[in-house]
Amino acid sequence: MSEVIIYSVITAVFVGVSAGYLGSLMVLEKMALVGDALSHVALPGLAIGILLNFDPLVGAFAFLFASAVIIWHLQRVTKISFEALVGAMFTLALAIGILLLGDNLDALEEALFGDITQISLLHVVAGVAISIAAVFLTRLIYKKLVLAMVSEDLAISKGISVAKTNLLYLFLVSLVVAVGIQIVGTLLVGFLVIVPAIAAKNISRNMTQYAALSAVFGLASAVSGVLLASYLEQPPGPIVVVCGIVVFAVSVLINWRKKTTL
Image (tube, rainbow, N blue to C red; front, side, top):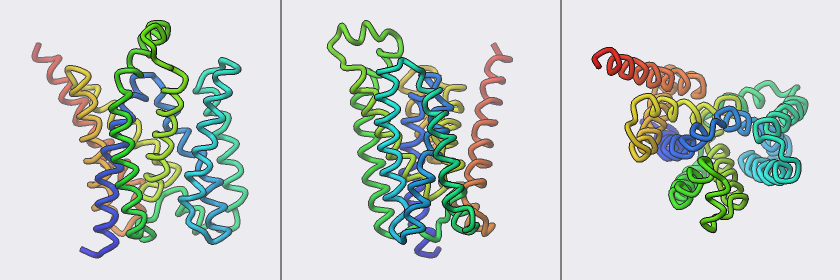
């Protein structure tokens, strides 16, 4: 197994776990499309990095962080839904990114679908550190976010700063999305935040099991997809999606069998 594949698998393990775990909250909040659309916001940052010859992931981090803050602030001021704001930001960012990379088809394909050959040791270390930090911090605020979903007034009465907690969560999702881009690209990284969680929701009995299975399914989708993509010599993004859909299909079958046996 080559060094690049080892780097890719290690990154996939941690990104898959963190994306699945954080995505479990996205699905609970019925914000699955927000997680998908948010990933596209990174495209202009990637494009600028490619065009100016600096690490594209730095540009992705910058754009995702700025977008998270802008969306959070606009939502507080205007009371417009996150879905609408992220949708508007997503379409704008996608248009800008494509315009910037329009003449560079290879770079555009890399940004949209991922390229594991570009993963370095520095990317691995950053990805592992960010993923661990994201899971740890999300675990600390998980119950607060769930309570705020049930009743924002109740959460506030218990001394929870709902606005700040939501901002931290959006920031953590942005970090995980940025790290995941190098594996599956901007077009498909939202998949890792959504599908493992909905697969886990099909067969989970409680919140603890739901969060854990979301992380496990994210890991299974990312790692199997990277390994299979390497074997087939294909871009990893679409293969990760196919593997994840298989996981989801199995969860649907298990859920259906449970219901038919009752």
